[in-house]
Length: 74
Image (tube, rainbow, N blue to C red; front, side, top):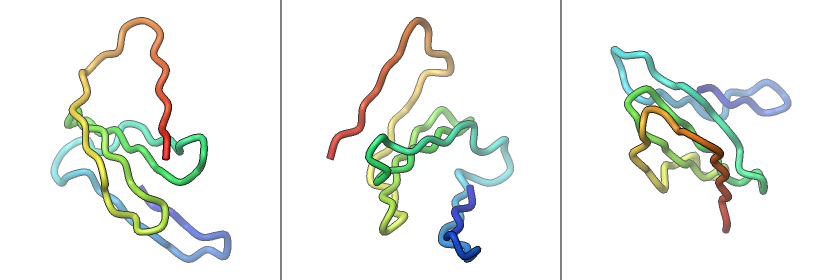
């Protein structure tokens, strides 16, 4: 995952792990302060948009069945 500023500077580079499929999905929180990154190692990592540090990691099941809604709160 590469994050760029509006003027084209690379602000952040993230690689879930090496020698595998890597990132599966990426989504911003509704407030725009957190970036959630899901990868093929069945992990969901949440990053802060100011420091780009991982502040939470969750194990995720391979398949979500049924309706699923999630909210991120500050």
